[in-house]
Length: 553
Image (cartoon, rainbow, N blue to C red; front, side, top):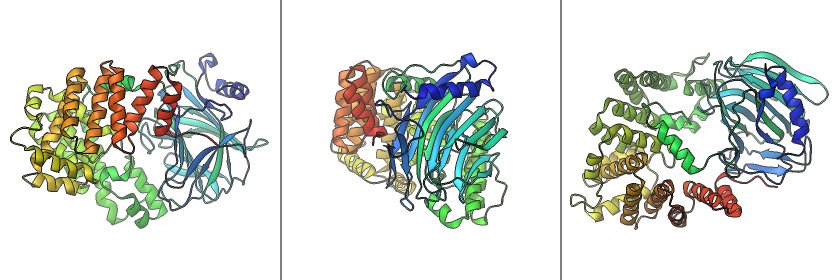
């Protein structure tokens, strides 16, 4: 992706040099001109989301420089938004220069542009650092938890943005021009959440996030990010990625040897709340304030009595998280008990409670609680992370093995298959799982299945890959009459084979899983890795784009 960016980068580096004590260490982390033939989606470059009616595509209709830009189109009331989200190596020090050009067809329509960190897009530490948006026909940014208007953009005018973020100090300079005059020139602005040291690992261009009322059409060009520190990112091992599945798995493995810790909030549903209810029952200011509550902040405005209990519960959850992080498991458990009372059905709250039980080594209670959360996370990696961590902390493989035979005499095969069809055949909910646990015929099936998952991950995380492979194959065979269950365990057998160096066996397992279900992003991504390792660039791209989308005209 060279070409026109070479001349742009010179200017960026000069601008960054004015804020950096050592310009020679500047490193380009990402640069996209969208004019080149090689524009690869992937976990370490960017991914394209075109859910509902939204669209993200290359366009030669408009361009700030060169021949092409990226066109994002949102549609109101389609219950989703288009997104171009890019990834960076995590930046925790130095200064970061974010440069891009954008043009809006109708500035009255809502859009959002942001830099965020490992804690995703919330106003919290390592969450959103820089947030640019349109509101009421004005371009604005969020600084210190407050929306601050900048200027009223005009239709079909290219605006060039340069933001230089001092990560340790949590301050940035912001300069926006229309190509002839400077419209915004801010110095030493507090980052979005006013939290110094907030890291950055991703950037995002979307339409309307919350209200779903935007029909925005806008164009993005010349996206470049430059770091002032010398931590040069590793080279790509495959198009669109710096790490393969096996590398990521091993990083997770090292991470899971640490003490339990709360997982990041992704959406109101993590707390058992309905985003549609919040939109329908809160004013725009109240909704914005509640978003701050979700990210652990104290909003400057009061909230209706109808959501005060939720606010209190979320506050208790954050209190418990801090206690857990400090190694105070008993205090954490007390806080989580309060949160669970006020946020029934909050899977993130239940999972934090489970992690605390692991820290307290209360395994019997943990098994029951894990069964109550089983399956609610779908393909969310956070669930498997916690199960793997529990396997590490528990360490009693012999106890696991006593429960691992799903065809034991105490659990007739017909009962287990009937239960598995119900478990995988419809969306799970806290209520459905509660019914299963209360039913003397279904409860042993659910509990044994949860133990089976713990047993598999405990083998895998201990690098007993051959045993994990055999066990996953055994589960896949036993669940052959339940396609979704069989596909899941085939994929897991492929994981074990991949980690053990048996690539052909892994590919066959992933292909078998894909053949059983209509969409399996996990198996497709791992097939892409395997295709790269075998030197098949065409298959690598086909599999990868089946997951991350493609950026084409």
